[in-house]
Image (tube, rainbow, N blue to C red; front, side, top):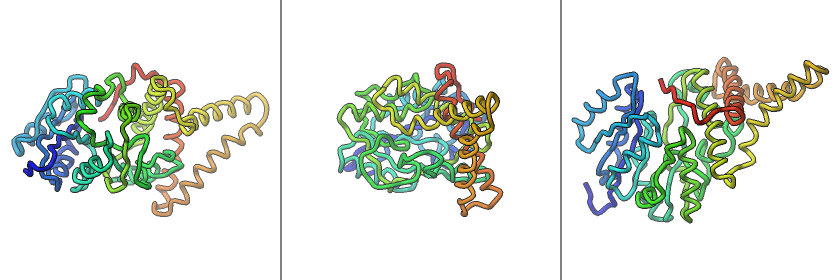
Length: 327
């Protein structure tokens, strides 16, 4: 280790990650940054052999530490790991992603240059199956997920939020870490508090992390339903954080419901808004020529699923009772 560099701790919530944990950790262990002092895994209740695998990996590198996360919640796991962390910076890693080997090097350089409280980059959705490839296309499309730069890249600079993140450990602990009442959107909410504390959240397109999306339509629907539900909860907690774009999915759901009701009660003309949305979704999907035609048809369904699920979650989701099926 190069002790002239600031010490860095990796914190990772892990649950149902038997198939992905070893390759994720391989990208952490292969970092070019030479003062990663510990890699702390917060292991939640899993339906596979995640815990067994984690213990085996611990034998390979003593920097890999394990802490039990009885709730399985992401925020709780990250906070538990951060309590054990001794590094000057905390690198949040997801157990279903792959880091480039210069990820920590870039992050530490940027956080020192800018004085930011959190530095992060691009969530590069990547597919290993046809369906995942279609979801990845949707998640890197402005039509699919709006204009947040961390989905598809953009110019470097201050941002509302970033993917994952590398945090100033002292600030992270001063702010109390992640809000453990949030199942989703806990990263966005913490970034609000970082900005309210007068520190930057800094986006750099150099930090590109491969992320593997959900592999079927029901998982995707549930994921985005939760996103919408917990986004509403975050907005209630921080009303000034609301963006106009966040009203688009719930407005779409309201429009669809109104169109159908008015069609039944009065005239087929009231289906025009719904039909227009469906045609636009199909057209945007068909224009994605990097996908085979069959997957472009699937992509149109994925667009609609993401939009409707997020909107329904925002309008009717019960954020206090949601649980995460990560299987």
